[in-house]
Every structure is written in structure tokens, then in C-alpha cells.
Amino acid sequence: MKASLSVLIAALAAGVVADLHYTGICIDTNGGVDAYNQGATEKACDAYKARNTGNKQWDQCPDCTLKNENDVLYYCESAAQHIGGDELNYYCRQNGAGDSIAW
Image (tube, rainbow, N blue to C red):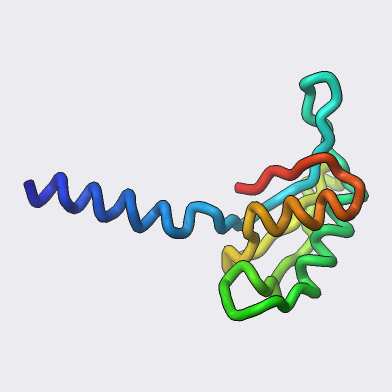
């Protein structure tokens, strides 16, 4: 019983922060295929870094930084896990992307 309760509590605790991420990119979906949108990713990361809408972890992203893998895939990173999935999606759409992916 104690083991089951511990697993349940851990699962519920994980669900509370499940919408906060370390990394995100903007994408477009064309014909069912996801395509990376670098321009929107760069602008969305800058916009999220400038965000200051409250005191929740996702309301500000002072450490949002544009990074890249071999100058090919540019992504927005928050080492302190400030990226909210809905918020990133908002900024991606504001900057011309059709959607976003955060992890």
C-alpha cells in the first residue's frame, strides 16, 4: 500500500509541472509533416525572454536563450525550466509558425 501511494503521489506531482519545459521550437505542419520554422523559433525565444506577465514560473523566462545544434537546429532553451507549452505556442503563432513543440 505504501509503495502504491508513493507512486500515485509522484505521478500527481509530476503532472503539476508537466507543462513546463527546458526546450522548445516552432514548427509548421504541411500535409501531415512537421517542418521546423527557424525564423519563428528565433523571434518566439526573444519574445518569451522579454515576457513579464506575472509571478508564475512560465510568466517570465529570464534565461531563455537561443541555442543551436551544429548551426542546423536552432531552439529556445531555459535551464530553469521556464518554458510553458501554451506560452511558447502563442509566441510561435505570433511569429508566423503554425505550431510548436516543447520538451
